[in-house]
Structure formats: structure tokens, C-alpha cells
Length: 562
Image (cartoon, rainbow, N blue to C red; front, side, top):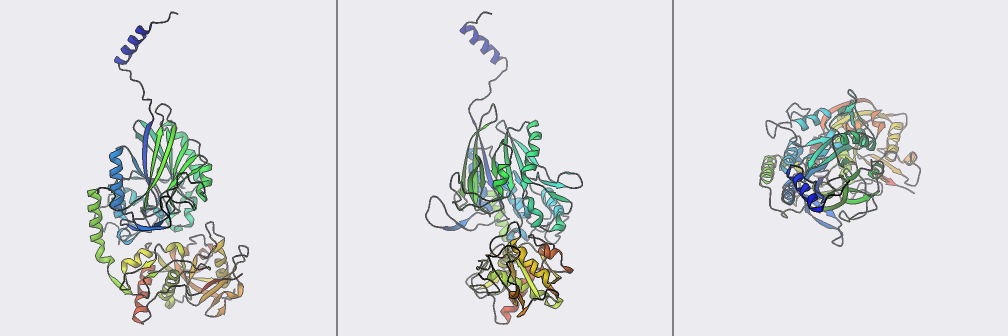
């Protein structure tokens, strides 16, 4: 075989190209993602407290707001028109009144206008059940909340972005309840995005709303879909997962390494092809490395967006480099997105009259959720008292409130007058109060379950009403922490054999927050009294009696001993 001369080679190559064959690009391709998690319908900016590598001491400022987020996305899209705006769940639910009073339809519409493309579901997307989630995805007005649905606009079109849930299985079909993944073509590279939600979702939402759904192991479900995605040409894999962790490091520390929590174990079990994991749920900002993979989260409420840049080899699809930067969403940083700004203005105007309605005077500017050594809070005691007051006529003797049900402190203005909006932001779920029978032994078991729960901390999570008291020993083993004779009702030690009528929200009544003792209670009756209405009436009653609620420290109902 004779070798061709260089001129002839060049001529043949030129002829080959002119015949229509083009060479593949060889320079790395830049793919950009903007990630948001735990937005919780925060259309307006809110207070953000954080530590940064760029400043000393804790910083406090207003941050977030859909107008600020949309402005940032718009500005960054001018740098890269192909960037993907994605989410990691809890975009709705536990929302301020401006969104929740309209069934979160304004938040879904605003995120659509801002360019949200894809998101995993979060546990709060299931707050009102599977049927309502499908309505919020697809649109329509047939809802379990007819007093809220389609009240903001008469025709709700549904979210303009796609919710993903690889590990939520419909028992009737054996298939994912929502799409498990989506493949996007970005600059000629097929980017596969997989969604998942924490496997313990069933413990933090109403059981009746998710009947027929199974929440599987996150990593197994994610890995299971990789072959099908490869068969469809996916080259780059990104996980959007509503599960997280905690780290003491600043939210913007590059490659943080002290991350702990459920997300760490999940990441370690993922297919090696997955290089980027966008997380949520723990409301903590971080940009970490776990086993060489990038794991991010952007706090909550729209305070922080995560900017993720991947450099991808165009031939192999291999991710050569990944850069992450968490950016605080400071109002006014970027030119406004006029459409989203106009939408926010409209939402404010529509909601203002209802939210500004005065309720009652309180004693202090802030009734907060700060925990005592025993785990008691001023706000929790207030709500438990309100729950009891609303159901005393139905025989209730003890009121309970879960910490997770209180989404904000009860903050009021200088006039010390609480408005409906002030109360609503504390209790956005619209839960109803259930009365039920529990023996003294069941109540003791309930108290011990506070430290048996998977997500339990070293302090109590159940708030209790006036007249009910107990002490616990943090050094004692789980299951034996409550001091027996310290559990009293109106000064008398609880009788294990006696039956007591207790009250709590319907989420707790179904065993939510991993409290099976509530699920085992007898003679349950849903009063149909909403928790927010009970609190409003309690505030009014106390104000009229000349005893406005509020204190700077808890009442001492729950304590610790050594």
C-alpha cells in the first residue's frame, strides 16, 4: 500500500468536507443550571440571616422574592440563553398567605413566568393529597380546596414546568406516579435530570392524601432509570432531590466538606455517572463535595440561588469540570423582569385587603419559636392553648402542637396589633383540629416517641397546653427519658389507666411526624375547626379579656432534669 502525498491528502479532505461531512466540535461545552429549592411560595422577599466567607459575623438582610429571582435568571440567561432553571421540591406548601390563600396558584404561575423548567417534588407538594398535586401540575378547578382553587383567576392552567418523582410509585400500576426523569438537549448535549423526594415523605404528610403511593429508597429508584436514559441518548446526569443535610460551614464556602445527614448516604450509593446533586428539604445553604460529586442546596424561601456550571466533552459527554456558586438574591441587583414584577404587584394588591385585616393586640412584637432547654417555645404554647380553648366544649383536656406546623414566628408591627396575614404565615396549612381519646399510658408513650423519631433532635418537638406539664432526662436512654411522676394534668399525676380527651391537628391525628401513638387514639372526631381560626379566636378572646398573649420566655411546662 502506497502512502498518499500530503497535498493529495489535503485535497481529499477538502473534497470530503465539501461533500457535506462536518467535524465534531472539540472544545468543552459549557452547560449552566440555576437551582432553587424550598421556595415555599415566598413571592415576596423575607428576612435572611447567614454567615458568609466574605464577611465576619452573622449577616441579616431582606432577600428573595419572585421578582428578584426572575431578574437574576433573566440577567444570567443573557449570558447563556440555554441555561436551565430547575428546582428541588417544596416550591409550594407551607407558604405565606399571598400564595397559600389562593391554593398556591400564584406561586406556580410566577415560577412559570420566571422560566422554571423542571423540579423534583417535595413532601409539601403532597400536603393536600395526590389528586391536588396532579391538579396543580396539569391545571383545572376540581379541588379538595374549592374555597381557594381558581379563586385568584377563574381558569388555572397548571404549572408550566414538570415535576419529577422517580421514587414515588403508584401501587395500582407499579410505575412512577409522576415522570421519573426528563432529558433536555442543551447545545447538542443530552442532559438527563432525575427527580426524587425523601423516602420518609409518608411520615410528614397526611396519610389519607397519599393512599396508594409508595415512597421507595431514593438511590435505588434513581439508579434504576439510568439505563433507560442512556438508551435515549442521555450523556450528562443531574439529580434533583428533596432530601438534604446540615453543615456548620458558610452557605457559600467552595467544596465544603463537613456535610452530614441523609443526603450523604444517598449520594454515596448513586451511579458513578451522576456528578451533580441538587438537594433540598433541610433549608441549609451549601456547596459541598461528597465522594468527588458536587452536592448543592440554596437555603429556603428564594434567599439563595445555586449557579452550576459544567464543562462537558462534546465527543464523550464526560463532565470535565463543575463549578458552583451560591448567590444571595438581593433585591435590586439586576434589571427587573417586567412581566414577573407586574405579576407580583397584582398578587400584592389582590391579597392586601384580606391580609391586612386586624385581629387583636398582643403583648410583644415577636412571639417566637426559640426552644428552651426542654424544647418548649412561646409560640408553641400559644397555639396549643388555642387548640385546647377551641375544643374544651367537646371535652378536650390537653392540646398538642407540632413544631413543624409553625412556619414562622408571630411577628407584629409597632402597634402590637396582629393581622390575619401575621397569623396565616405562622399556620399556612389550613389543618383542622381533631379531638380523640388516649389513655395515660398512650400519652406517656407519645412523649417518649419524641426521641424515637428518625429526625428527632435532643429536644422536644411537641408543644403542650396550659395545665399539662412534664420533665425529661436528656441523659437517659430513649424510651425512658420522661420522668414518670412529673407528667401531670392540672397538678395531678397522669393515670396510666385513665382515658383523657386530647386535641391536635389532623396531621398529628393520623400519626404524622412519626407519632404512631396519635394514630392509635380512639374515638376521633374532626371538629372541622381550622387551626388558624382557633388561634385568631384565642387572640381576640385574650385581648378582650385584657390579657393579650405573648411573652419573652416559655411558660415552663416542659423541662429537663439531670
